[in-house]
Length: 309
Length: 321
Image (cartoon, rainbow over the protein chains, first blue to last red):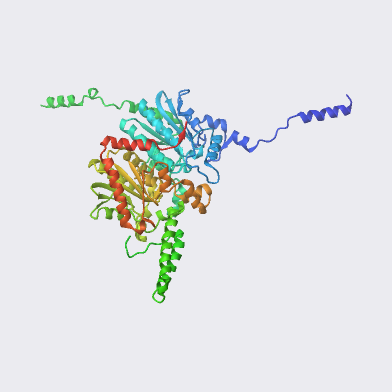
């Protein structure tokens, strides 16, 4: 090999060598997440193994429906129902883009058909009917599909006498289905009336963020109301209120802790404790049937009176 | 409306106004030039034709303007005309009495009903007191108390809706506006007495629905009913405040369109020119419609009445599997 060949060979080898490009922003973001609260950089895998809660400041990241289901339910126990239900475009709604196109886009981004997943599951061994909303799909907004799936889930719980658990995360009613979306508030609340009458437990879990038509219907009708730490929950949005009353609102306004202080939720529960808490609540209410035979205060009272005589 | 006050004209009525001015001018000259009589008569005819044609070609935003007309009859105006001796009741029995929500005992024809309606207030002072017709949670809890009252005494419920929506304020949130609305929805679904709701002006979102879950929903011809105010919709979807007309059109919020969607049971015809031009007439038309619906509903058994309402809402929605 003469010198010329050697150089040519080296050049070839160098060309073939893969040059490592610096990570793109997207790849970088996939690897690392920054905490919105304490600005700490967290390795994504660590974040997921910590249930998407910041290990440093306990900030609870928004999570998708499937991630929530895998966190809450016993492995392999979740059976989805009404999976194929999807939206139509009843009003032929068009703003700067058509609703049907926006629906496709939303599904492509979120990988979901609509903003809620419903089904039967076990939580720490307790059978429940479970619905989980996903804010990443169309802002978790409630249109005909969410309304119908919630109503069917309630009927499923009623029919099978299962406690109902719904994890909400929503911007409110879906404008693109107009008045039909508004009527889903009525539909879901009316369905809950059946559950209420039958004496079946409904635990409503409010996660970041839950607003508008969803709070003003099924999300605030729980027998037990649980909120996730730091979650923002309310009827009207912060900006709308500030514009209306023309004054600044306190920083913690509409947070889960603020709601607890004002008597609107029963408890604020960390994500790590959520499944355990639900399971205990379900367990407690399963034995609520009052059996007169098991309680004997009357007889004892009589005997005490007799003794006194 | 009171006879001494003239109806305030709306933007789309401008051509009519111009014509009316011409007629007035000619009429003033009639004394000196009797030959003009034929022209005046002709113009009067034209005025009638133009008015009818304007009112049969209203755009959604024109309906909105009529629904929000400052002289639009409010709940009290109707209650007064249904029953001049109606009895107003007050307070939610917990903490306050919300003037934005009027409740009372009203006789409508042969029926005694528990009546609930929103009030926007007439004078500026009243408007401020009534929060421009936007109820606080206390208002919805006052309505809730009346639902229970109706259930106890087996009285039908009549609700008249004309509100931009529930009040978005700080104390409203602290007192749990969302829960107040949600609970009303569930309790309305549970009632075994007939509920008839009428959207008389603006049906603004959850704030309207909170007293609107009913066996029969009626809408006045120019009333509107929507999931969000068109202004809100325009600013969120178009990011522009001058797209209100487009938002009105896209949301399908007029009585006719909502009737076609199968949500509203009847559209009540308004006098030509809108409800504000003839208070007595619209009250009478509405009363006849109400009695007709109450006639059918009161014939049903209490369980059937509840069932009828549940079935009505269970069906609403548009999905494919």
